[in-house]
Length: 69
Image (spheres, helix red, strand yellow):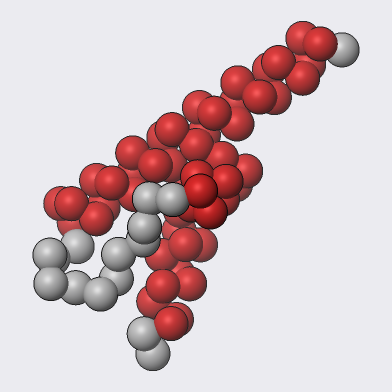
């Protein structure tokens, strides 16, 4: 049981770290600096990318894009 919980926690933190790194790379290198389509590096984006993984990062950018319409 403890091994199962430990594995789930480890996968969560790996997905969260990859998601936050992906957000940082997209904000820094892909999107122009004067653009308003930037996702912040905060607790909500950490939890979303940790729970959903890379699709969660896409969801965050989708929400930001819908806000500027």
